[in-house]
Amino acid sequence: MSAVDPIGTITDLVHAIELVIDQAAIDQVTQTLEQKASEVHHCKLADLSVPVSTFGGSATASELGLHHALAHEVMVETLQGVVADLEAYRTAIRRAETLIGQADESSAADLNRKQATAVLTELAGHDEAGRRNHAARNHYVDDRGGERA
Image 1 (spheres, rainbow, N blue to C red):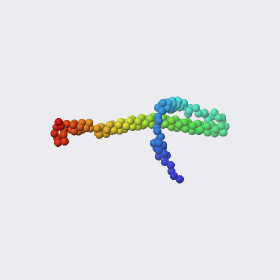
Image 2: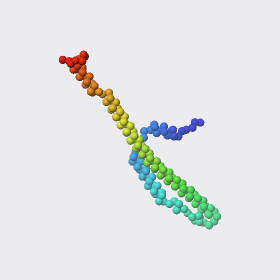
Image 3: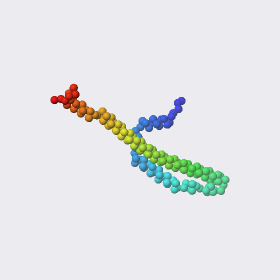
Image 4: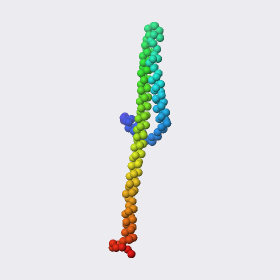
């Protein structure tokens, strides 16, 4: 069984696909991520726990309360991880946006350099002074170096 190279596969896909950026969609996603992250930070899920004594005084109720409290802690930490992941995703979107902008600017600069090279190459083959000199010599000077009549 052959091993799959996930990075190589992603790189191949990126090179094969034209990258179309919808700035409005990027702005909407980052705005939504910022808003929801702020809402989650303001909602103190840890403060919403139910005291173990709420389930009663029996041994079974106490055990149920303990398991509920532990499950609550698992949920709190998981949601904190989700928020951290979403914040990292938002940061990655911003970084990607910056890199794409830099790539666009770099591509534009490369194209400008190529155009300038093409213009200079075209001009290098164009010698109006030499052409006129040659035409004038042929018109005004005979083959022996003298003036034509």
